[in-house]
Amino acid sequence: MTEEERFEDLVDEFQHVTGVTPPGASRGFGSHALRVHNRIFAMFVRGRLVVKLPKPRVDTLVADGHGVRFDANKGTPMKEWFAVAPESPLEWAELASEAMAFVENAKPRTPTRRKR
Image 1 (cartoon, helix red, strand yellow):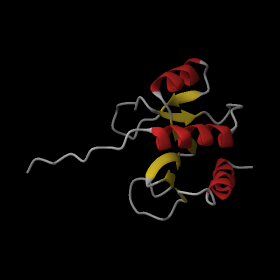
Image 2 (cartoon, helix red, strand yellow):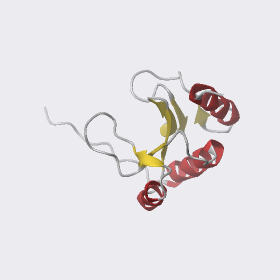
Image 3 (tube, helix red, strand yellow):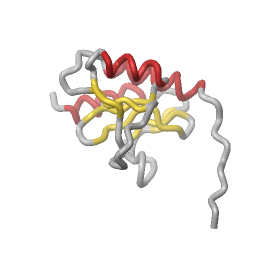
């Protein structure tokens, strides 16, 4: 099974969960992402599953060799985003469930004003 097929299976598993929006429901960043209440918790980027988790959990997963911090091609790895290594034995559905719970329980973001 390819990584793309694994992600498709993950989407099939989560798309019927209340509050979850499957990929393709939006454009641009996150168009290949699973969202819960409009917040991304798992996405497929450059052939890897990427999940949003608490920083200490990401620290542990990276230290244990299961993957790396996700870098959105800006040169700075993101502290709460984890990209799973293809050879990692971690279950994607378990990581996605953990990420969904983390995102659901996170404080709502406060909109910021852009300087003009």
